[in-house]
Amino acid sequence: MRKLYFSTLFCAFIAILPASAQHKKTPEQAIENIEAKYKELSAQEDYVRVNGVPVAQNTRFIQPEDQVVEDYSNLRQIALVRHGEPALVKTGKFSDEEARQFLSAYDSVGIVVPDKPFLTVKDPEEVSIFCSSLNRARATAKYLFGEDSLITVSPEFREFETTLGKHTLKMRLPIKLWTATARVKWILGIDRQGIESFADAKARAQNAAKLLADATEENPKAVLVAHGFLNKYIKDDLEKMGWRVVRDGGSGYFGTTILVKIDKKANETPGHVAHQAG
Image 1 (tube, rainbow, N blue to C red):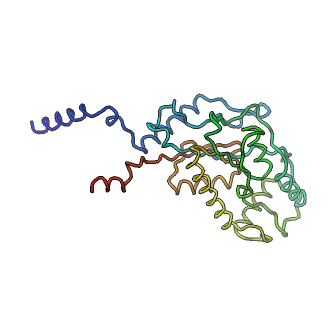
Image 2: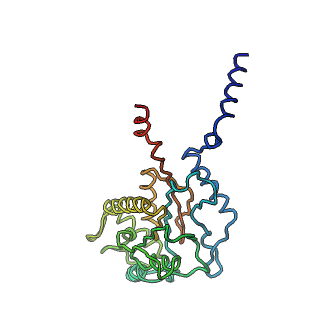
């Protein structure tokens, strides 16, 4: 009887609560709802194609009409976009000199253009757009947002270094093997020739993550069009800052990863609660 009495009392208490209190979502629940929304979108959205081959799925930011966040003004969003495929021939085997020429061209050529943009921005005024200074990223950003969009281009968003160094094998190898070997040597600090160190590059990624997070204080959404390695470390740094990945687009060309953060209302902060209690 006693258990039944307390159960009835609890149900009555819930019944008289305002509807908003009964259905109020925690930030954790809201993020779970956002993740579920992206899973739903991924089951519905088409793929963009390059020369008939599917390369990336359409995506977008969360909007108020999605009804997954109670107070949309508290939601901040960041999209990390990898550039498109550079317009270069990668098949066959390369000598060390040909590999050097390839790496030089890789930083200057445009991209293989898809049949349509893969990231939709509903209200450009709500979005701060950032871009690497390397041409493959700039070409991708211009394709996505148009020539007239306000895009902050900076070498701070360039890719981690890939250099063959002075000492190379005198043989012909696939370009992926050349670049993988160069990246490992660079990470280990071997044959670096005075370029940025791995530690300095990670620090640069950390600064970039802070810049993007700070940008969402002014505009609720930010987009960075950059590179695979840089984006990976920025993502990791944002997660350390409390951001959550709600869509992992992978590391392929046009891969788009979206992170969110939900700010607490001023009256929910510990300081405010303490003030009210006092």
